[in-house]
Length: 215
Ligand SMILES: O=C(O)CCC(=O)C(=O)O
Ligand SMILES: [Mn+2]
Image (tube, rainbow, N blue to C red):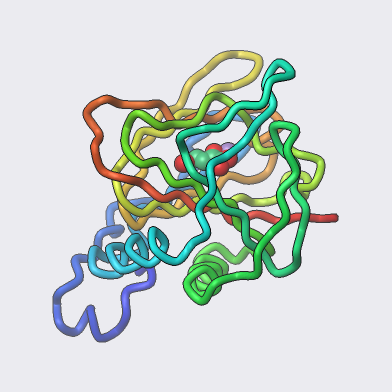
């Protein structure tokens, strides 16, 4: 069950959250695969990682070039990996920092859980519900084509939406504190995703998307 330690199960502290979640369910009706693993960390572990990530990551404001203009987002970002990979999106190139201890731990955990491998991670810090992410897909040239993207959430629970590029069909999900979502196969080619804003949310959320860079 998730990454619950034997000790935490023995102590009975840990509710086996994900018994009801079918990790093999494909949330997309066609043209890709999205699996939701639910909470793969218990409350204590998830709180621990949220705190570590808020404090130990080199958060920076994100820059993007949109309609030829440079903008700086309120949301913060960071980019880590096993090599100083360069990764370009929204026309800005970033160079990866070397993994931190927590990121390596998290990478190992999700590799075990999903059977996939990853060599880099893009992190987003949304200070509250006023910050979100617009419709996009993660299909930059630097990313492995149809590679799996594993998304971990710590902090505020937020809605996550997917929309088919041709049919406009929508799928909406809730990403919980300590949860794991995997997007793979043709998902990025056929679907957009976004994180809508919500005025009611006042807590921060950290999202990690583990990816595979091929260049
Ligand atoms: O915050 C999220 O859940 C989504 C982040 C995302 O889509 C991205 O970083 O490309
Ligand atoms: Mn994305």
